[in-house]
Length: 303
Length: 223
Image (cartoon, rainbow over the protein chains, first blue to last red):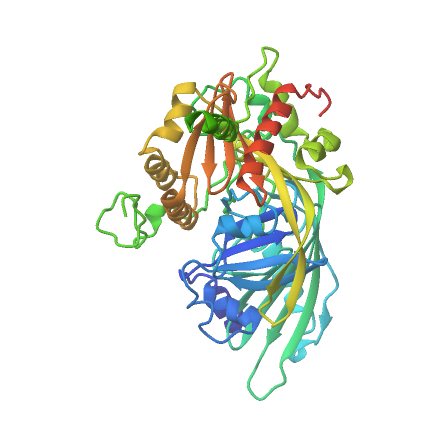
């Protein structure tokens, strides 16, 4: 059993980069918001039951659309329209930007309480105490956590190697594991102050029936972080600043996710400097730079 | 012969003159930036009747959407939309053919403190977009994938983007096509009026009417 758990944890340290997808969330009268998918294109085939390689081979201009139509989230791939045209199709202004998160489903920044519910399922292979609940408690840490803004579902399992899929704009799924042990985590943003999750742990041992355990987990915002309205600084800003100041009300600029060493969730650590964990252009060796003239696929105005 | 054609010529000249007359709106002395900020901070406080009058629809149809997600206020926009009675359809991945209501909209946003010189440069300089692309790709706060996607999008837009200087709107103003938006500079601040209407001429007129509304909108002290 220890070997299983060890191999499971080792799996979390593997890293990979693959093709990403441009995702739009649209609603009639509001237009669309855009983000680059966290999940790889190949993962979308699993989510939507499409043929293997379908999303991987979509044309470069393809936009994967989640549209709220008649009160229900619907899914399709748009290959005819540009971002601007798609936004206008849904009544928007035609000006678009790509957010690093889905802005329409953004839980508030602040202090959140985690409650791990009762484990249901099998007692695996004669274990007296429930192994999974203790593993989960070790990973999630009890008590309160502080989610940075903007929120991302990956903060719930603050490990860059966990694969996240967005099933719907309000629904995320994480999974990791191997043929012997895997863990799925379904997370739904109920509203800006409540998130519900369900862990499903499955262990498969040859010659035995799979052992499945389910553990619900609830996150509730107990103290919303106060924010200074950035408009307050507008009148005092200097003209021609490239960007107006970003001024969260807290003491620290914690826009980027904290990446603590040991814990999977973010502890409330008021005295500590957060460490940014956002991939930089420099981190990716194969990313073309606009000023690197020889790269063929970089758009130049003169083309 | 010439005498007989004079009335006809006069009529043609008059019609041409009327067609070339862009609607105008000057900046009132009383206009203050805080009027604009007030709308951006609290778009729900804007009179739906006034917007409906500009839109040519019923006030009860006006829907307000505040895209205030970016901490950078110069990227924020607000949208006043209304169902236009058209039906559109989409086909979902699982093969369903769904109908949805078409919407038109007018919007306001991208409020930025800027000098008049730089505002003009932004819409007249040939290198402005390339400079923006360079800035985005060097911005360390941006995720690499996003920076590249945005740079490509800006470069693609630049191929079709056209700006026309409009006289008599604000201190300086430019009409952007094909997105049909009006960029206005007044008293050290620039802002953009967006339109989503079927007719380009109507878009221009309604955009200018909305500028007039912004200039004359009283400050709402309550947030």
